[in-house]
Length: 464
Ligand code: ADP
Image (cartoon, rainbow, N blue to C red; front, side, top):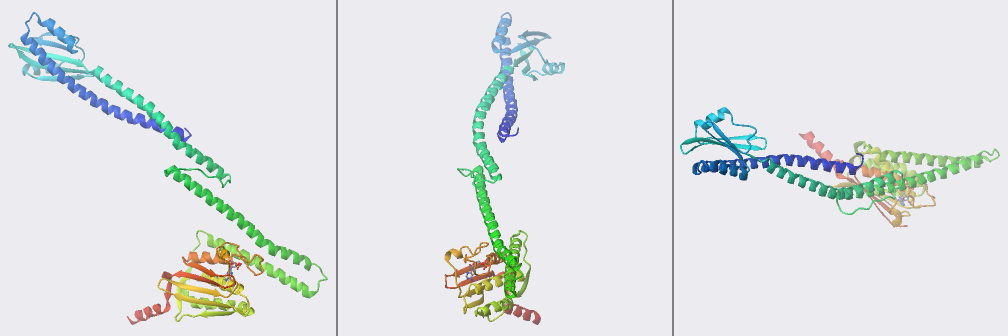
């Protein structure tokens, strides 16, 4: 039974037959007990009636009247007196034992009941007109039991037919959407990410369909990102490679003057460095994207770290006569974070601020601490960004400057964002075209320690 349809039908039939067998068994037993009880009551009143007849009817008329009674009452009986037994109707099956006879003879009014498959038997001793009688009456309730069994069978049959038709309709309603989903899944596995399934309602299957659609949408998006990524990567690699190839070919000319030779060698060096930075950045992003990426946190001075970063960027700033203004807070601020990764964040942001600021501009760095977080702001008076650019700057390989006149590969801010995310921080950008840019990074306070608080604590500990 391979299909879910077949399994559902088999399950239905098994459950119906199983439940009806149990229900049938118990109701048959109950019915049989009830019929038996009623039969014994009838047999009791029959025996009383026979006793009355024995008392009031003359001996001569008695056999005829008792035979007539046996015919009409559907009961067979015998009367025994002084060891003489007269049967009316057929008496068969289980009979009274000698012990039963003894009990009946010893105590008048003793009642003995017997059960013999569908037969119910009743015997009682009487004293009639000064003589001892044993009246034994029996009745077959098999026919009545069969009437019940027949009606139960008809009910089962009707329920089975009606239930099967209803179930087939329901199974069809359940199975059809699953088959549709199965077809769509096959399509998806073949790479058709546009496939979608229609659904209505809010039941489990509708929810499954909705999840399928979401998954297909997500896969389509991922596929688009993947293709975009491949095209971006090959483009980013292609430009420096073309330059390297071109200038290397020119360098093969032995008559090239030394000055030009050096110039072209420098260009090759520049592009190979660009390639190296690109592959390093890509590797770094792959590591940061990994599921098991871990931050190696330690406690360090944020102010010292920022001062170090500014020092490394000083030469670049000087070459463009850009002033870097570091607004030092009154107290040192210590934080617990991944020191080397956070350093990468500041390098990328300060480097961008200098790169995208024209000569004689200013880059301002400030740090603020509140009860909830530490806030680092890197502001420049540079070229700024359009609203459109702001919404894309954290995407891989995005660059506002399509002419690529400024060195870069569009991965720096993606790395920054990922590192800040890993620290559960936030990064906000405020910028206007030709109006400078401001990057605000907030790191949650539970990882930060104000040096004065720590010193105070140390002093307190020492004094104890
Ligand atoms: P890139 O290597 O191109 O600088 P980033 O990921 O660091 O790559 O930045 C992405 C883009 O965001 C840049 O190409 C630039 O257009 C824009 N950008 C980043 N920082 C600044 C800034 N301080 N001023 C203006 N534009 C910026």
